[in-house]
Amino acid sequence: MIIIGIDPGTASTGYGIIETFYDGGLKKKSFKCLDYGMIKTLPSFAPSERLKKINNDLSKLIKKHKPEILAVESLYFFRNLKTAIPVSQAKGVILLTAAKNKIPVIEFTPLQAKMAVTGYGWAEKPRVQKRIKTLLKLKEIPKPDDAADALAMAITYVLKGEV
Image 1 (cartoon, helix red, strand yellow):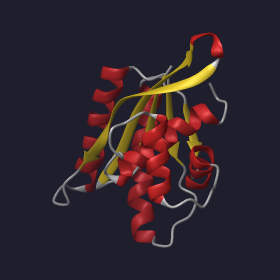
Image 2 (cartoon, rainbow, N blue to C red; image 1 turned 135 degrees about the vertical axis):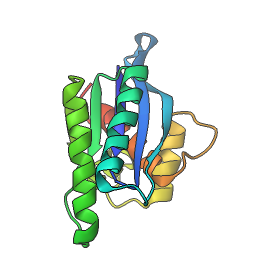
Image 3 (cartoon, rainbow, N blue to C red; image 1 turned 60 degrees about the horizontal axis):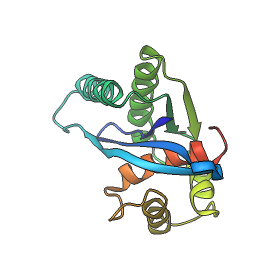
């Protein structure tokens, strides 16, 4: 099964694409990282152009990797309304893009992702990134942070027993 994880934002949207499968007859879940990175938009773009770029780039990723599930970070708390509105707009575009491609969406809070990936809901980013590196057998810790967070969303879907 191929899962795409998304960490929404208008300036930068992180994505991480994993494939999960069972190892041999052991019924042990294994992961393989297919791709990760950022969808970046320029501050000089109008808000509508930023959202259009997120839609277009995400559509290309979906076409290329054909994910069966989209796991996205849930927007549950914001201290800064100036940040909350653009992130909510980006998430709306992400949800629409998934719906247009008939991909089911599941949401996880950062706390749920940290708990699933490390066993501790208040884990710091370096601990989460190190665990992602181990689970996906990567040579390096995934960078930037938004991409690592997106990979955590995809992994959480599997570890929470959704697969």
